[in-house]
Amino acid sequence: MLASLPSALQTLANYRIHNTRASKEVVEKGKVLLDAKTASSLGDDAWAFLEQLTLAAIDVANYEVADECLRQLAAQFPESPRVDVLSGIRMEATQPPETALKFYDELLETDSSNAAIYKRRISVLIRIGKIEQAVTELSDYLDTFYTDVEGWVELAELYSSCNQYTSATRALSHALLLAPQNPFYVLQFAETAYTADDIPLAIKMFMLALDIIDRHASEESIPTGVSIRAWYGVKLCCRALSERSCSSASDTLLPKNLPLLDELSTERVLTAYSAAGKDNATGRELVLSWMGPSDRSGSRLHFVR
Amino acid sequence: MVNYTVGQLAYLKIFFHAAKHPHLQVNGVLLGKKVSETVEIIDAVPLLHHWTSLSPMMEIGLDLARRHAESLELQLVGYYQACERLDDTALAPVGERVASKVKEGFTHAVALVIDGDKIGSPDNAALIPYLAQSPSSSWRPYSEAGTAVPFSSGSSFSLSPPDLPARAVSLVRDQQLQRKFGDFDDHLEDVTIDWLRNKAAMTFDIQE
Image (cartoon, rainbow over all chains, first blue to last red; front, side, top):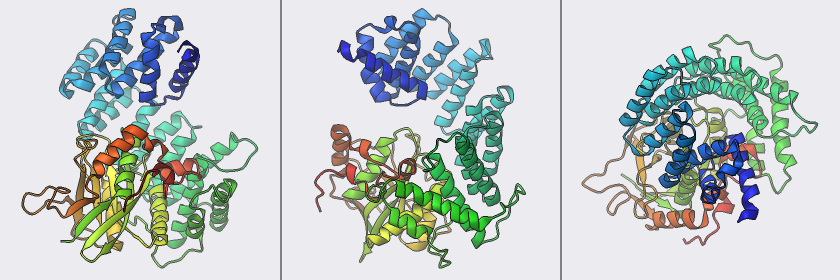
């Protein structure tokens, strides 16, 4: 068991860095470390580890482990706002939502600068289905804590879930101001704009996402991950633009050479499939036929508004 | 009123998709055909677990799924989703849109919403069917005439074979098959992921 300790610690540290929610695994590995009482030997990392284990344990309803971690953290950091947040989350897991909300309200009364507590309140509201109130509180929160990029993205997702796509793009535009080099946010903006039926804006943002990725790309030119989604998006937009007249609520101008973009996006997506090898890329024939010459037989499914 | 049966392939795929992302909304489409007065829901194709309110990748996935269905001589016959919250069993706005689109091509289209509270119990199908009068009308949870609950005996909705929930639970719990399951979102990250068939996750004896 001791031999696997370093690798377990490494895995857990990786999860922390990447914010991975592999709760079952974290508890499996973390419990071993907790039981072996080696937590203190981790130095400063010990507390980040205990916090991670607390959250994972709550996620899989292992309250014994969660409570033990919380006990150690509270002993080490009495009256810590960060530990307060964990206590609140623990409360949310087994107490009625109103109890947690009350707990958060009391904390905010003594310290109105604890941003994390506002967000816990909003999470609870979302969880009990009070979306309108959550949107209001989140908007208010962002008025004060403007630089919370995650908050803007969460607001956008809340709006999207209620069919308010234009409001979602407005929220995302703040996220883009704060983090202009993040291709995920740009991609999310593009997909939201498409859903809001602003095709010229969508294609512009798909291209921007590709531009950002390109700047940081290595020598290979095989599209992966975000690029594939973005090229698919460009292709979808080109098709929509060639089949019907698309207005732009944001007055975005169309890109100049649509037929070229159409060809390029087709080629880029198909390259991704070819690169994977004939036997490995699944559904390649289907994609090929989907790419095929535009047919107006109505055999494709669109969300025409 | 036609009858609906949900077969093993379809049920297990829906179950694995939800089990793989327990804290997220997931959705996908149902494949099948109508055989006299019964809609047989034979297979399912999982679509998204990420940005499930946004349409572009959904549209592409739907289109590809439809072509895949045709290659199997099946049709798109419905839509399924699992909600983020346990107590939420409503059909999301995006779900209504997709289901209505499917209904345009198949009159008896059905939307199945996973009952987050009941799923995991071996004797409960944990599926709530939604039906609509027409593609432009709203979708309502189906309520049986009399006292039958959907998927219980006497209902128009049934599982075939009836012990599917127990089977699904044991496959997830004992073999972790949902870990080998991939949807269109996963496929967009890695085109070698077999989202249309998911053969890697379906490694058990398929009984007809």
